[in-house]
Structure formats: structure tokens, C-alpha cells
Length: 100
Image 1 (tube, rainbow, N blue to C red):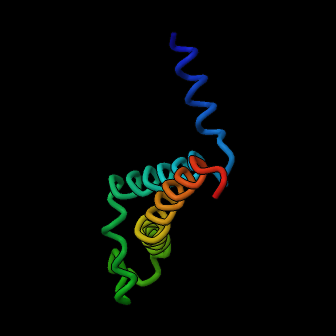
Image 2 (cartoon, rainbow, N blue to C red):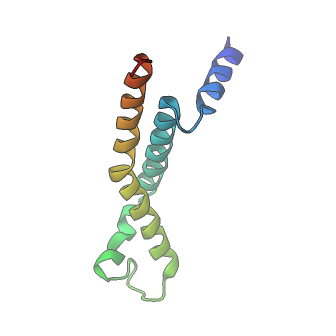
């Protein structure tokens, strides 16, 4: 029973990129990566946006890179994930009407 479950998950994850399931997979993946960044506490290091150092040391570039990663994944979550979800919905509706 468990092998069938894992086989189904693997088949779902290998969906073509330009398909409703592919769009949903990418949206879930981006959301998961952002969740990991958020739970790791990288939000604290986004102070570089206002021109200040996250740790107070101007030469601490590693913390700035972590802040940039959080900012990039937050931007992807806000801008790209909704587009992927809407595209999956529209694609799914279009596939249900093959003559359109």
C-alpha cells in the first residue's frame, strides 16, 4: 500500500511544466521553500532593504545574502505563486472544453 502511495506522489511531481499539475507543483515548491526560510528566521536579516546591516557590522555579507534570499522567495510567493495557481485553474477549465 505504501509503495502505491509513493509511486503516485512521484508521478504527480513529475508532471510536465506546462500543465495544471505542473503549475500547482511549482507553486507548492515555492511556498515550501519560503516557509523554510521564514521558519529559519531569515526575516530578521531583511534590514538591508533600508540600508542598514542586519547584524550591525557593515562587512557581514553572509547575513545580507540570507536577507536577499528571504526577500527573493517572499517576492516569488507574492508575485509568482498566485499566477501559477490562476494559470492552473484557467488551463484546467480550458482542457475540459476541448473545442475551445
